[in-house]
Image 1 (cartoon, one colour):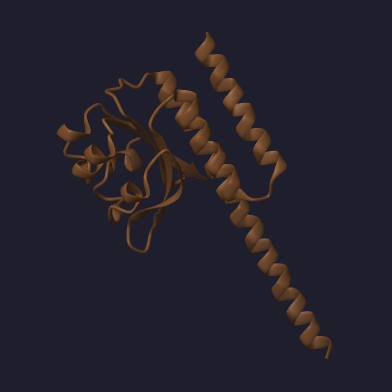
Image 2 (spheres, rainbow, N blue to C red):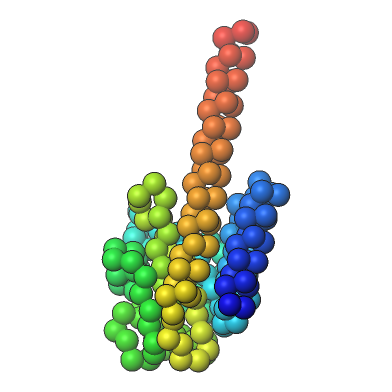
Length: 183
C-alpha cells in the first residue's frame, strides 16, 4: 500500500507542476526526476522521435551522465524498437540482450535493467520514457503502469505546448498581415 501512496503523491506533484507552469521543459524534467526518485532507480530519460532520421532524441533526463547521454545516435528502429511498436519492454540484463544498441555504454554507466514505454499523443507514438536501474530489476505491472502514466502526462503536455506555440505563430502571422494591410 505504501508504494501506491508514493505513486499517487508523485502523480499529484507532476500534475500540480503542469498547472503552475507554462514551460513544458520544466514539467518534463520534474517528471523524469519524480520517476527516478519514486522508484529509487539509477535514472530516467524521456526521448522524442525525430522522424527525419528515425532517431530518439533526449528531451529530459535525470540520474544519467552526459557521457552516457552522448554515446551516439539512438535509432528508433533498433534500440528497444518494440517498445515503440508493441508497447512496454522490460530488459532484465542489458549485457545479454540484443535489443540494446549500446550495451557496453550501458554497462560502463552501471545500468543493469531497462524499462522502455511508448509515449502516445492522439494515437501516434511521439517518443519513449525509459527507466534505468543499477541492479537486476523485475519490473512489476505496477511499475510499468506508473511509468506509462507519467509518460502519457508528459506527452499530453508536449502536445499542448506545440498547439499553443502554433496558435501564437498563427496570431503573429495574422497581426503582421493586418499591419501590412493597414499601411
